[in-house]
Each structure stands twice: as C-alpha cells, then as structure tokens.
Length: 462
Image (cartoon, rainbow, N blue to C red; front, side):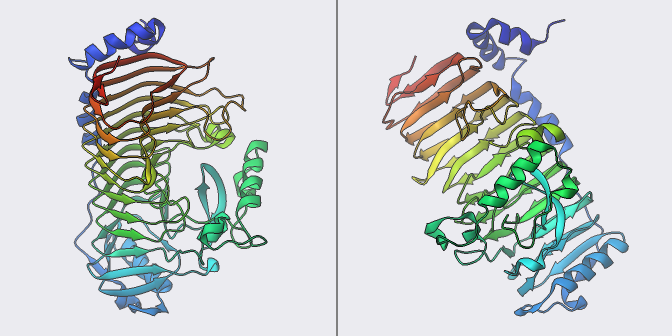
C-alpha cells in the first residue's frame, strides 16, 4: 500500500492542497503532539539533599569548588540519587560531570561561575558543530546517564567575554587581532578528519587547540530535565543535548552575545519539549540539529518529535531553526504560541541546508507565532547556506506549514530557495498576516506552495 506521504509527493502541487484540507480534519498533524508529550516525562529524584558546601564548596568566587562538585555528585549517585544543592553564593568551578539520579539544583541567589582556564576542562567525547571528537569537556556534561537534571532559579555563568573564549572564533569585533590564535585551522582539520573517516578516538583536540566547549551537554542520556536556571556568558552553544531521549527544557532565561552562542540545540534527539524559555543570543535561539556531513551520515540519527511552546525570542539569527548540521535528518517539529521580536533577529522560522549536508527535513509545523520585527523573513528555507550546491548530497525538505502567524515588519514574508533538481515541496501558509514587508516573496524551485487567507501588506496573497 502506498504511504500517504509518498502519494502526496507524487501528486506535487495539487497534493498539498489536499494535505492542507486534511489538516483541518482527522489527519491534522497537530494530533501527534499529545502522543509526543505523553512520552516526555521529566525525571523524579529521591528526597535527599547533598549540599555542596558540606563537601568543601565555598561560595566566595575565589575557592576552586571543582572537587566539591565532583564529591557531592558522587555521594548523591552512590546513595541512589537526589539533589546536589548549590546554596546562595558564587561558586567557582571547572567542568562538572553529572551522574545518573542526580539533580544539580542551583538555588535562588546561587551562581556557578566557570573557570576561564582551558586546562580545567578535560578531554571527553563530544560533538562540535555536528562532528564527534575528543575535546574540552562542556562545562556541565553527562555521558550515557539516566535521570539527570539541572534545576533551580540560580545562575550558570560561563564567564566568557571578548577576552576569554569568544576570541577563538577569530572575530575582530570581539577581542581577536591578526596573528592571534583562532579556531579556523582546528575546525578545518576536524572536518577533514571526519571526511576521511578517521576514528573518533583519534580526533583529539582540547589543550593546545581552539575549539570552544559547549555550556550544558548531556550526551547519549535518557530522561533529562533542564529547568529554571539563568544561563549567561556561554563560550559557545548553550543547552546542547546530543543523542538523548526524553528531554525537557523549561523556564530558562538564556543570554549571551558572543559568537555561536545558540540558545538550545537538541541534536539527534528524540521526544523533546522546549517550553516557556527566553532567548537573547548571539546566534540561533533554538537550532535543531542532526550531525554534519560525513560524520552526521555515519552516526545517522535524526532529531524527531520536538515540541516548542510559549517561548520568547529576542536577538539571534533565527528563532526556530533547523540546521545547518542536519545530515541525519529532522522530522516532526511543532512550534506554537511563541513571541519573536527584534530588529537583531533575522528570521522567525529558519531551515538552512546545502548539498554537503544532505539529509531530509520533513513535517515542520508552526502556528500562532506572534512576530514583531525581524530583519529578513518570517519563513526561510535556504538550500544555499554556506556551501550551497557544492556537494554530492542533495538536501530534501517537504511538508512545512505555518498557520496563524502575524508579523509587523520584515524584508520578506517568505524566502524559499530550493535546487532545480531538488525543489522544496509542499509548503503551506494559512490564516496569516505579514505587515510592512519590503520586498516580494522569493520562491525559487518550490513545488506545492499553498497560500490561503494570507495577507501581505494588507492584500490577499496568491
């Protein structure tokens, strides 16, 4: 029996009209959301507390508390789980590694401030821009653990600025000067190693190299909760679950103006809820990822079943973004009831890919987005990001639908650029109003674009 999706793709433009009609009835894709959320269950923890000060931690922003965190987490895990409590004060630390059953609880008035010395972050298996390697530990890290959390109303301070971590990007507007070390050579070397199939344990970077660590990264973990805390001054990507299942990201305030400081980047994850978070970032606010190029195809795990609700996006490149690291594919993304507004926010919904990434992105749905001003477009799907057509792996994007989206100002309403040999398929925009749009829609190589009850600058669009 032919699948419904195959049938729609075969019919092309007329098919998506049927798809849109079905969306109003029993086949409404949003009916999948309750099923996804039934599987997203935050972990619970025994009512045991382990105060980090009992293990030698001192909140004076001077004493090195790395060992105190390690010992408190170890004791908590051995006892069968509970909370490691960080009380009021400023606790200076190197890398913190979570263990199964541990909730790192950062209390109101507490700050964990991470050391600027790169030697405080030992080598671990991690992913850097979608490629596996051995690199500096993320500041808070967990590997193959179950039932872990970071909670509380306190602050995680990555302590990065234009004199620490950020200059490794090589940006002259943030501390870097010609002749200074930067990530460029290491980044290129890592990408080349992945293309050659060099085994991951031999991709050793860390000390003496310049690939910045991520802020919070659970890796191959199950039942993850990150709730309530404030994240500031991250060196790079901020909340970055990789190859995880059942992830809740809730009630966060995320701020960083540095390069590549994406807010939340679930990568090759399944069953994810991101809700009631505020983003003010130096890159994409939320960026769903699935591995880069050859390494993404080697791991070959998609991101799927991701629900985004009630979030607020201020500065950043894209609000709800997929890519560009998307070689493993992405499917079943639902974003609703979010507010996006800033002249420094470029796109509301952004899909970016190219012929080096390849992969399939499908079933992306957004509704009731309230977009104030964005610089570029309400929706962009761009196959020409970075390498564009220079690659052998044709990207595929189909079944993208926006409903009840309002926007006050942007350069474009829609900016869609597929390839002639691989057009974007089945894009629907319904019941939406885009105001103060400066330029006509760009729709290059799009098959099955459907606009219904859509106004652009007050006029019905066709």
